[in-house]
Length: 143
Image 1 (cartoon, rainbow, N blue to C red):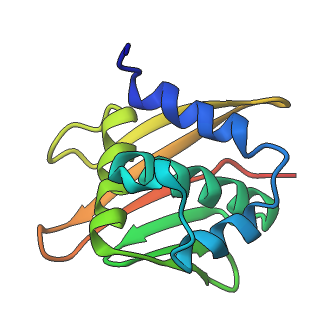
Image 2: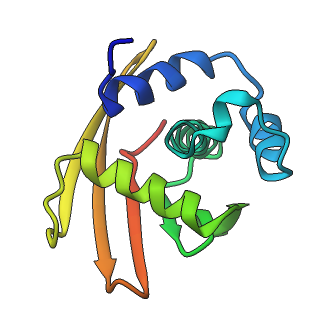
Image 3: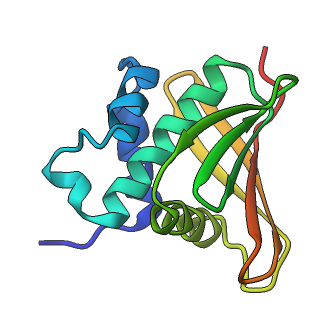
């Protein structure tokens, strides 16, 4: 089997969930209703990232925050999105920093993803220490 790059696999999940009820999918995911593919931590992290991105777009949230055991949408009401395994959130954060080209110890990177209506350029920032870290995915202004 040919190994696909993480960015390509993330893009495939975005394509897959383009027409889905992403909030319902995310709720099933949080409740532990996962399919065989989700048993792989990397695949599960890519899936939850795609779901979080679509949810943030639909709610017009300006940022997605990954920290500890939570993924939050940062919008005027700062709504919590999902609480999942800290290991899974950490893997999602690792994936985002890797595919955005963020260097270890670096503070900012960017990630471009394609959607049917065009592309989004996401800004990626990280802060904190090994014990208390956060990765923020900034979305461009959405109309």
